[in-house]
Length: 330
Image 1 (tube, rainbow, N blue to C red):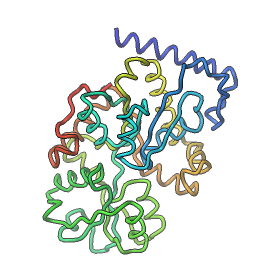
Image 2: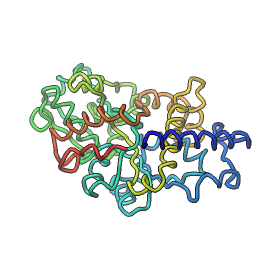
Image 3: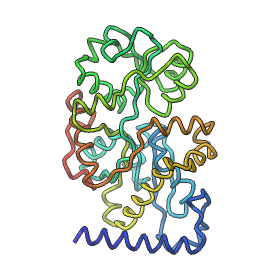
C-alpha cells in the first residue's frame, strides 16, 4: 500500500511538472517561475535548512530556481542548524550524517533520513615531500578542522582502520576552517585534513600542496562500503502530513545534483554565476572532487549503516550515544 501511494504521488508530481513546462517553466535555465503560476502545487512552501559548505551544494538549484515551492536558509554552524530543526523552523535539512544521528537519538525519532547528497569529501593534503603514504604521518603534526563533528569522526575512523592511533601515533591540531585554510595557503600547515570545498581551493592556490591518498578508497577497503558525509533529513511529522511534498523534493533534489554534474557544464556555470564559487574553474574542480551523489531508499541504507558503525567504534558520542535503528530511514 505504501509503495502504491508513493507511485501515485510520483505520477501526480510528474503531471504537475509537465503542467509547469507547458506554462513555459524556465527553471532549468536558472529562471524563477512566477508564484502565481505554481501556487497550486502546495499551500505553503517547504522550509529547508542547509549547513554552509559542501552540504549546501545539493540544494543550490532548488534554492535559486524553485523558490516557488521552497525557502532555503543557510546555517553557519552545527548548533544553528540543529536548533533550527528542533525548534520546528525547518521541515527539511541538509547536514552531515553525524548530526542526523544525533538529532534522531535526541528527539526520539522526530527526524528521518530521506536522501544522501555527498559521500566522503574529506582529503589529506600534504606539502611535505617526505610524506608519500598515510603511514608516513606517524609521529608528525597534522592540522585538521571540525573538532567534535563529522571531520573528526571520519579522521579518527579512517586512521584507526589503517593501524594509526589518532591519539598516540600522530598529533592532530584542530583549527577553525578559515584559520586552517590560511595556514595551508601560506605553507604553515604542510599536513592537513581538509573537507571540500576548501581542499580544492588550497591545492589550486598553493601549488606545493597536493592530495596524498584516496581516503574514501582506504575506507571502502576496510569497511566494504563507501563513507557517507551529507544527508537530507525531514521531520517525521512533516513526512506524515505531506508525503507528496517529500516525493516531489526527492525528485528535485536528484535533478539538482545531476544538473551540477551535467556534461554541458550548465551546472558549473550556474554555481559560478550565482556566487557559490569565484570562478568557473574553481567550481568545476570542486564539484569534481566533492563526491556528490544522490541516493535514497534501500540504496543508501548499507552505506549509512556502515558509516554509523565505523563512527560508533571510535566514539559512541559521534552518533548520539547509540547507532540509530532502522526507524531513522524514510
